[in-house]
Amino acid sequence: MPTEILMPALSPTMEEGTLAKWHVKEGDTVSSGDIMAEIETDKATMEFEAVDEGVMGKIVIPEGTEGVKVNDVIAVLLEDGETADDIGETSAPAPAAPLATAAEAASTGGSDKVAPPALAKDGERVFATPLARRIAADQGLDLANVMGSGPHGRIVKADVETAQPTSSKPADAPAAAAAPTPMAAEPATDAVLKTYADRPHEEIKLDGMRKIIASRLTEAKQTVPHFYLRRDINLDALLKFRSQLNKQLEPRGIKLSVNDFIIKACALALQQVPEANAVWAGDRTLQFEKSDVAVAVAIEGGLFTPVLQDADTKLLSALSSEMKDLASRARDRKLAPHEYAGGSFAISNLGMFGIDNFDAIINPPHAAILAVGAGTKKPVVGADGELAVATVMSTTLSVDHRVIDGALGANLLNAIKDNLENPMVMLA
Image 1 (cartoon, rainbow, N blue to C red):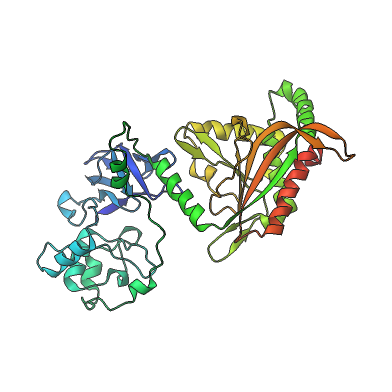
Image 2: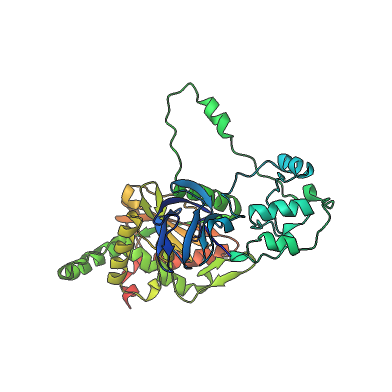
């Protein structure tokens, strides 16, 4: 039977994407491993390879289409002997109809019934072909109870034809009582446009990355119980040590940055306070043996957080080279998904922009993120009580209270401070 090709999830956060370009056309022979299309995800434009072989029977989603949901049918592949006439169930995904309209259509009878998207008991969407949905509506079938035999478990015509009908009248359910209390809604787009209708402005369309950043960080700020810990760190010893190292490393073309030391200090601190080297996993936490540290990199229109794996075991020079490579490829949007997924801890450094201090938002499932400000000259009181001038860097540790309690977070930030103020110890 024809094989439906579904919109793949090419990154951990991808929910929808843009089908930027097709590399094949209808009638072309496709082999496993062939590049079929270019798909723009929330992070980058990536090539999509064929996993099956056959003849491209139908392109459902034309190139340039935005907002294609993951698992939507984008094309149909035919096997030997099959023709376009065998493609009877596949169509481009239509916009979801309002529930009232769908219900009215389902009650009118006839072949033009419209079935609303089915939901499983856990609230997830049930994927079915349009024809299967129409047949299910005719027979009073609950698609949440039908096992799909199509690609990736998709429900097809044969599945609903062999399924046992259920009552077409939905059972009474205390849906309203079970529904969570909604948060205060954002101003509607129309209302905002109306407010500023008489002011000159330019509407800037959000790309996939900007939409994902807005969605994920809004969710993070609303659902993650943040608390904040702050410490000032004396950088004088580190700056002196860095200068000495860079002179010795100059023949090798290596120049260490303060950020390289911060990465190393955080990685070692996660080893010194291992209970904090963890992430939130819904109904449990995952505690890690190695220190995988993510570092925020600003790019045009958004940011990446490439992950330095096993940062606790790597030399400063190796961390510096790897970070420069990741940052360069992040700005060119050339990172592979596995290079910016994972990690238990993140660093966001705005010191190079002259920012003294700020509070960063945790990127779930991370348990903490360190916000780093600029090192500035400040008066300090020395151990002997004498007033002196030192280079001081302000840091703020944002912590997920579900994973890390106050005392544990304090121990982690203190360990980071001790490592940075005693940089030679990090080489021991």
